Structure formats: structure tokens, C-alpha cells
Image (cartoon, rainbow, N blue to C red; front, side, top):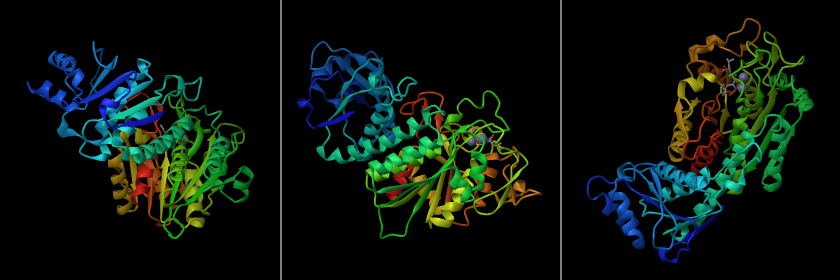
Length: 491
Ligand code: BES
Ligand code: ZN
Ligand code: ZN
């Protein structure tokens, strides 16, 4: 999609539609104030007419198309921003997304978007983000259904200095699209090998990113016993991917980002029941986010050191599948009793964390994983759980989250629950029972972090959406890409 800027309203070209955002006004001053705010003189009468009818009052995400008799445009699209005192960056994202979705429905391809006078530049970023994040379609027939997308948006009343912010936001959106495409693709296509090829493709595009891949044989030889165990029941062989980007070679600071890459989770021999398996191609959403983040970081040439680590496997059923009750040795040397083969995410993450601890000298580790069904029950599909051993990391993540509106909520790494992971036959067991399922999963991971500042983000509820909501599409969301890019920009 092409973004253009036209600073002076009068100089605009007539496109398919002119989008006009309105604050919600109460009482009789309502219409006048709204018109004043928009100040497209030629439409004053028509707009007053519709606001007088009370059919449109500027409520959040209210939208109506009108067809003026005179003037440059064939169509005006009025969108509501809600009450001005409730303004936030997300108000603009949602309003812009509402306009874009309506344009999709009406097949309008080229739009003028009048930007109201804004108190903060982040609000303009919100508009651009809302437009970009909602201008995404995924269909089974084509990976992304380009035909229904908007081709051009011209922002009216914006200074040309906004260009840099727009270009940066486009790169970030590209990273989100990449993550969404990876999540949405068929599990039979988006295999561990495919994720590895995608990571290598990013290295090709951005030579600052160095990608290495271990195949199944190497995983076995290197004694990554848990990743090997999870992957051995599938003809789609496991892989272990690292993506290094050193944007600040003088600094020792390094963020290691780990993403769960289970390309399909049948549950293994502890097979998931019908109703629980249908969305399990999303079980690599953590990996998708990490790949998307690395692509953005490299495209923006951020001056930070980041390493993406992706353990990836298909948790399948076969004579070679790993077995409940058996004991496997992790990369760290700790032995793990398999209480349930469906708790596979923590196994492959444990090996990835141990790898990071042993070889990457991380300043901090952040892992993303669709780890537990209990997370969905606790926080639903809008909020991800954060588990961390570091208060500073926690507040930095919350700060980034407040900016991107990818919501996170801290949950406790309650140490006494470690008791629940005790095993008679190994150092630890991979399940802790039904109660506090997300916490015991996080506590399992903590056993491998060796005290390094670490945050685990459980995105089981937020990675995949069952319905379209503002700028959140149905299916793969791409949760975490914007969050971590913002986080990295702040450190
Ligand atoms: N991939 C699932 C978690 C999940 C559930 C993600 C729902 C997205 C939506 C994970 O591997 C899993 O199956 N976890 C089990 C763990 C249990 C066996 C201890 C779960 O949460 O039921
Ligand atoms: Zn599972
Ligand atoms: Zn899983």
C-alpha cells in the first residue's frame, strides 16, 4: 500500500472516498463543534445535516458513508473517535481500522484520510498503524488476498516530516504480516524446515542477520534431548534455529528472544480431543513473532544486539513418538520425566533457554510461547501473561505494552508450587497438575534460566483470534512483534 502526504487540504486529489474523523460531542454544540473540527468547508452543510439527525454522533468506531451532492468527493466516510477526554493512541488505531474495514467492504481502493489536529505525534502513528494493521487479509486460496486490499492512503493535513515515522511503521507492519502469514499457513506447509528457510530468507534480505540451523541429526548429536524427543514422532523433522543481529557491536548488552515453534500440536500420545486441536497450527506463534521481530529490527537497523532462538518441531503421533512416563535428558543435563506429551512446549523451550545460557551470554531472555490452555482461561484473548524474575524487565515490558496496546499482565512465579513438578525418577517432571497450570509451566522454564533476567510471555490466548476486532484480524494476530520492537527501541 502506498502512503502519501498532502499537507494542504485544498491540494488533495479526488480519490474514492474522503475519511473524516469526529470527536463525540454532547448537547446542541455537537454539530457545530464537529464541523469546526473537520473544517472541510464545502461539506459543512451535508455534515451538519447528518449530525442534526442524530444518526451519527462521533461515538467510538461509529461509521457512516454519505454521498454529497456537490464537492470534490463522491463519498465521505465519517468515523467517530469517541469523547476527546478519553483520547489514547489506541482510539486512533481502532477508528482508522474501522474506516479501513468499511472501505474493504465497499471495495474502495484509494482513500483520502483527513488527520485532525492532534495533541501528540504518537496519535498520528496510531492512525498509520490502525490503517496498516487492518489492511491485511488472509485467505485459504492465496496466502494474502491482495485483491481486496487498499492500494493508496493519502494523509491530509500532515507535515511532510511525518514521512520517517510512516516508513518505520510500514516496516513494523511488514513484520506483523510476516508473523501472521506464518501462523495462518497450513501446518503441513509451515513445517520446522519452512521456518528455518524463512529465517534464512531474512538473512538473505538483511545480511546483518546471521542465521544458523541445526537439523534433526545435529540436534541429536548436540544432545538437545528434549527438542529431539518432541520432534522424533514426525516425518517433518525438528530444527533449532538461531538468528543473530549485532546492531551495537560496542555494547555487551544482548536480548535473547526465544519463540516456541511447535508447527502442529496433536498433543502427542496424550492426544488432544476434538475441539482442542483445530487451531494447533498456531502453536508456532512465538516463533513467528521472533522471526517477525528480527526482520523488523534489521530493516530499521536498530542499534541493539538481539538474538532470536527458535526450537521447532511437530508434536505428532507415530511409533517413534516420545512416550509418557519415559525420562529424557535435556541440553542442560537435567533429566525430565514426561508426565504428559502435550506439555511439549516447555520441553523445547527448556533446551533453547539452556542453549542461550550456555552460548549467548544474554543480558536478558524473553520467551514467547502458546504454552498453556490455562492462560486462555485466566486472561482470555486480549491479555498475555508475563512471568518474570526481574522487576526492571517487567516494568520495561509494561511500558512498551502501554504504547502498543498489546496487553500483558504479570502473574507470580510462586516458588512453593515447584513442589508440584517433583519426580521420583528424574530431576523434574513436565506437568504439575490442573491447578495453576500456567504458573507451573513457567516454573518449569525457570529451572533452566540460571538466574539470568528473564521474562516468559504466555500468548496462548492472544496469538490467534476467533473473530475480527478492529485492527486484530481473525486467525493469526502477530502478537508480540510490535511489543518487542518498541521494547528494544526503549533500551
Ligand atoms: N499448545 C498447547 C497450549 C494451548 C492451548 C495453546 C490452547 C493455545 C490454545 C500446549 O502445548 C498444551 O497442550 N498444554 C497443555 C499442558 C498440560 C498437558 C499440562 C494444556 O494447557 O492443556
Ligand atoms: Zn501441547
Ligand atoms: Zn503446544
